[in-house]
Image (cartoon, rainbow, N blue to C red; front, side, top):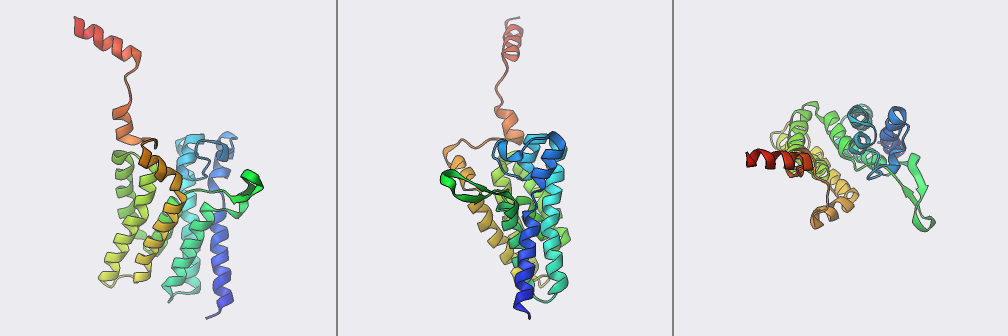
Length: 233
């Protein structure tokens, strides 16, 4: 096994993950710089806030595909070593979260890499490992998003579901245990990226979305006056 080939593959996977899909899509759809909108992340959720539903969905699909391509390349070049597939997947996630194309000067002149939180690339890599994984991941994360109501928890739930799916497949001998380990390692990367969101979850200031957000939405003055007048009749 050529170590240089493996290192080149990992670097290529990182470069694929670094492609800032959200920055490009939002710029094309709205002319905005997604890094200056809300969380400043380049993933699908923030792209939706910056440029609407279709921009968010397209960003999510492209982010999913770039990690899938990284894994497909690893599988083509090293078909019998699943750990290399895992390393390529993790490199793509790290590229998405810390893009070499989004290097900028932060506070006190320190260099920092911008990017997303890693949710879509995590799912995309799992898709490349086993395409039917989407039938578990997408419906379950959608339920979390809608009923639990936090985009950050939705992102965190994705690698957990992936771990359970691939652990079961490994237990029945349908896929390698390395793919289950991938879910655990991806979860660690996502938890690190979502540290600010976790702090907001703990202090109760994280933004609510979905069903719970609609339930908590306060009545407008018009609604209140209309309900008051109807109750006085």
